[in-house]
Image (tube, rainbow, N blue to C red; front, side, top):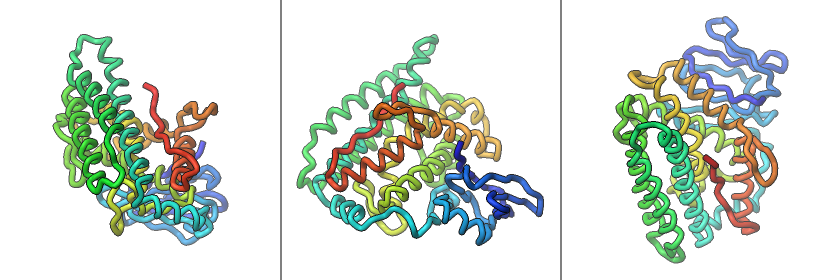
Amino acid sequence: MTKHLYIDEYGSFVGKTSERLTVSQGGELKAEIPLSRLKSVNILKGGISLSSDIIEACSLRGIKIFFLDFRNVAHTAITSTANHAVANVRKAQFLTIESNHGREIARTLIVGKLKNQRATLQYFYKYLKNTDKQSKKLESAIEKIKETIESLKNIELSNNKHWSQIIMGKEGGMAAIYFDAIGAELLEECDFTTRIGRGAEDIMNSALNYGYAILTSFVWQSIINAGLEAYAGVLHTNRPGKPSLVLDVMEEYRAWVVDRNIIKLRSSLAGKKELDAELKKKIITEINATMNKKHLYNGKNLSLQGVMQRQVYRLVGAFMQQNRYKSYIFKW
């Protein structure tokens, strides 16, 4: 099984011995992993050193190295210059961004996100139905998301200069309803009241943000492999330092890959003030397990990581107008 390595201990040294990556702390060997098993290395805080040998070895083998900031947001990726990017792929991507075709792709991404938010709520509702617990807010949110999906499908986006505000406004409204239902009926013991991104101090939002950071590295890797420009998206605003396409692609995976797993960990998170090493390890383990789980995709059993990569290749085809992009919807 391939491995995504996460390093968050201050003072760690990442090096190379033969064909293995090593992690040492104060001269003591803490971990040793065959390079052949690695997919990515994720540096989660400052004060961690990497040798030039391991950087070169990872680069030559296509192993991505990501650096995350204090918000657990990836800001730097080290990759090989010999990637699969080709000029016509990125040219098609850039031309799509300002086109009506790009707006349709953006709509598809948001509809896919809403469908997977709905699938996540249905996943938990299914279990609550077998208990004495009331789940009216979940029922209501499931129905409202369905109505919004139908509404989004009927909006005319062509030549509408306000198209982005319209679809993002609907997405934002549904996000509030979605998280309100989750907080009221699934996370009572965690004192979750509202979704907070940057600067979150409560345990649930901190856990969600940490999970999204892990998801970011999976998505970013798939985008690099496909030869696309991570900083040029069709949905999120493009500005320096913002990996807009990464954020675009993440949308359809957030609910099922991260939200669902964090909710499942609620008993471990309840009563905690901050994410300690043990909680971070649990989150990493759950998300990695989800990404390695097999799914039926076009007649083949693929890991979710494999599905994600093929979805990004499908996005390439949509940019080049060779096919129509279709979001991957999870079965609950």
